[in-house]
Length: 513
Image (cartoon, rainbow, N blue to C red; front, side, top):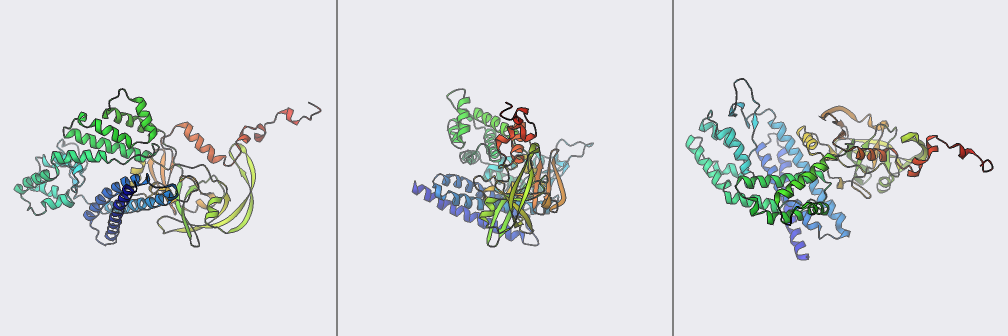
């Protein structure tokens, strides 16, 4: 076991070095005045491949990590995850900026074979192909229907479009050819021979299925959706290559089940109609489970990840904005860990849900908050509190997350890993509450609509998302209740006198009774 663990760690070390080099190359490219978009796109492809490999290695190594070293392992994994997310986002944003007004990579509307003289169709964008075999079919199907079989284009024009949509090793394969009709046919033949061989494609898609990243938690809807989409993509690709499911399902199903968390495996075993594995049955089961979990996504609370600094100490923490609170608060846990200096005390009467009131004495602190991009900081006066509120999950709706990416919005609490943050028991803990006394001066006024019930708001500490995603009523009410009746004894909620409703008998003396 030690030998296997050692080998995996050595392999991960090489992969981490590769990730660091790619991120450094992206950083260097972004500092240039004339950014090479093609180079950035190629680096992103390389980073995606190395990122997937790193995830697989992390999952395998975690099984060998002892409890006393687990925290260190999680922090290291989070650091590399954060590095990958940051540079991927910055590179994607720069590419989007540079190509926003450039139509060279867009297929004109005339390339639609079903075009009508009365209808002006939108431009069709085809993703570049960099030489990854598993993406060849997707690329070629799009290019063939839009360009290759379009009779309105000359062979030379088709060759121009082909070169414009290739990068990396794929472009190198035909780089030396002159733009002539004869060379276009030769170029297509070479690309098919190198990247379109059926045996190579079948092995590639089967290997991708065998290397599916394990799902650790069925409630991690983003990872669940990504895993499910990857499985479906690979199976559809095998079908297009005329590979029958019966030839591989007995091998694939047990391996995929090993990648699922125990609760899903148990439910699947209960639902099996026979003793034989069927890939269609497994895929249908995963689809039903995923849709059910996506329907129960929670409300998006206005949360952020910020840096708290005090002398030499610096930690990321999760923060919530609550305009219903007149004051701002920090958890006693963070105050202790950050060694904050008390600047006074204050007794406050809290008005809580249902008209409840209670007086509490709080220590006061002055803390420095800084956004994750490190270009804004502010000092905030806060009072301590045992617990700010219940742990709040992050927004995990894949559609909303993709919408944020399209708008170029970096929402720290959605894009960053919560394991980077300081927490006592649960990474989803909230440790700072910004009330109306502070939050009002941090809003920039910039708002983006994501859906009818969800908006993104920009603050000086970063973007946050607020509103209603898809959720069941019971889940929402329980979350809101725990936020509003913070630290109230549950027995108090059942006492009628708390709500000023008294039984006359309670006012009678023992003698009267």
